[in-house]
Length: 256
Length: 250
Image 1 (cartoon, chains in turn cyan, red):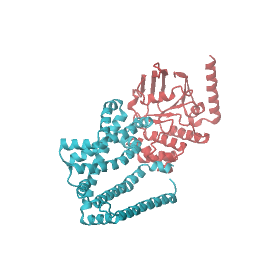
Image 2 (cartoon, chains in turn yellow, orange):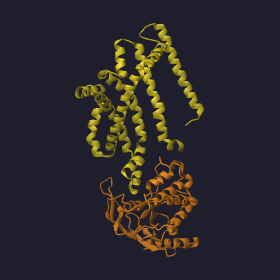
Image 3 (cartoon, helix red, strand yellow):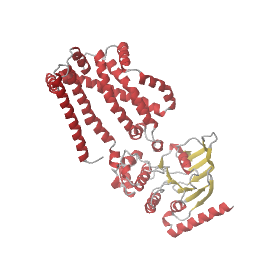
Image 4 (tube, chains in turn blue, purple):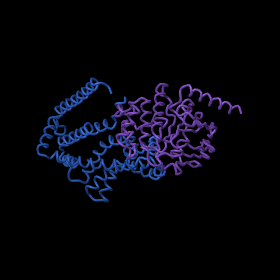
């Protein structure tokens, strides 16, 4: 880790870059004078208005709940399968063709089949998103499970650690970097797929709103929803994922 | 402190341990090894590097079941007993503090004050909140020894616990192990390539042959550990070296 001065100046450049982008957007919108390219001030006004009426927080809340549900399910199931496949050669041989199949089935196909087979339900929607993400989690966690340290396994056996203790103190901490990698790529992938699922088969949520405003050709609304949702996802990364990771790897940071 | 049958006589018989080789025919690490270690005493296994000492310890600890032979402690199968293993590398969990590492191995009946006393005795109590990455090798070894004792072992296995330490740190650590062996009744098995280490710590020394390992000679040291003077240690060591040379000449 470098000192405070360096990280402050990197934040300074990030801020400058965003400000320059907004300025460019403002100038372009001013030049275009078209409802198809609203300026940042119009988008901001839309966000404020819809926040006051409660529409935006409600729809964002619904979508966020779906993102969280799909994320938790995908991480839990994917980690379980990945752990078993990484530890057992037989399980790996059996499951590998199916893993490759699911890695390559397009998200849209999984969503359509889920709606066809299980109806236009909440469970089908969240399940379809989770199924899209699970193969990625499996691949990442399997890599980690293959790299488990045999010396630590011997340690756990000599001191007769219980299954729970072994998982909590020996196995999961070794997999932590792999969970972090899976979670990182997971959050961004999942929220994009959730919007598609909402567009195709739900009557609320950010995806459904985008669909409505698309039919009205309301670019201001589309940009407003998109930017706020992106901001929300960045906030989750900054204020939830990163602090959690810092806590989980504190033994490593202090060491360096 | 002592519970019924806490420590017992260890009997080891390894007829054959062969590692499968890449080319099909295996490498025989141990052949026809048999010895026993008396209850509440320290037995040293001394042998050249690569003679299969670590393999023998892993078999005794129940970590390797793929061998022909039998291990028993107090007449029962050894793998049902509690074992304290001081690995060649300290092997602490890097993401847990020193104290958490020790507590993880501690048995439920290990009392709080005993654990404190152990940490104090090994002079690592002040480092209890440090992560292993922040400890020197000497401190990590101490933690590893304390962890092994916290398991209240029926059998304590020490695999080259003093290697890669500077001579002063190694000497301090040896004195700690001597104190522990004298104060706590425990059956210990020490593996080392260093005769000086063995004569300082052991009640009995077993010399191993090069691979495939078997017992070459056995000798008891009559003077109790605490009463051995530096001059006596030198004398013992010289005797062993002479015996080894004589054996080679034959």
